[in-house]
Length: 370
Image (cartoon, helix red, strand yellow):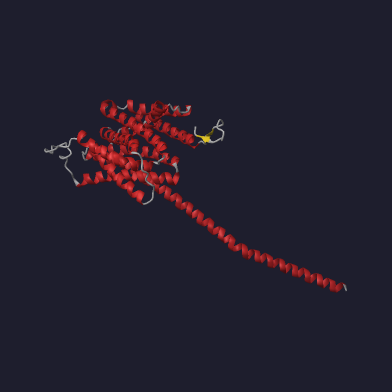
């Protein structure tokens, strides 16, 4: 009958609705934990990103503080405490670095690599030369002039790479180098302190050239020996230590038998001087450690940006702590040099990140570096 058919249809529709509702409710019960899990994973990922950012910021802070403080600590050691024995100071720094790098290797920060001594002794000699001359420049010049001349290392590297390897940089990179050179020239040539301290200026220039030569050699040796900077430093530091041990009695006034004033044996050791020298050596090791951590956590670009910030802080600290003069011409030169070095770094990083050029002449189509 029609009424029975209507009741059956109503019952079937009701069962269908109840079944649909049950399926929806089941889907909600299944989806809810999944959504909660996805939300929890998002929270954990956000927390991990925050921790990674905080860790990278901490590493950058340590690197900046160590790099800035070592300049001021060395200046105090060499001038305020009168410890003018740069070869001994460099020997102490190198000894601290050797102990520290072996400690890092034992903690699995990096894996040491045995390298042929004849391949790395020239690099050890370059390391000794650049550190000794840098300390002499800091001893004989103001902190500001010392740092300005260090800015000139980048264009000197470009010149040495052209002389030694006939490497021709791009036109834009040459323009950035010219800007750096003009800025350094304006900041130094117009400086009365530079004019009255020719010897200190020449030592500073020598430090710039030797530092650039050391950097070119280090880069070349890394490619030649397939070793990273930590492996290279750990390998050549002991050679640098015994080279310095030979140079100390030759170039330093030891004062054998007399202990006269102005000699190493005649130096008046105080607790403050010992602490300052120890702090300086520890900061040198801390720079090596934090450099490794910063590059690992952020990359080379961020490390170079941190380097520019360190330069600015050192220049400001020279004015505030050591009374360096900041004339209008020097400020203009520093600003120009800093702008050029930032531009140079940007171009260098872009060139480094370019993919290798495909060698179409090769049968296998393998990639070869530019």
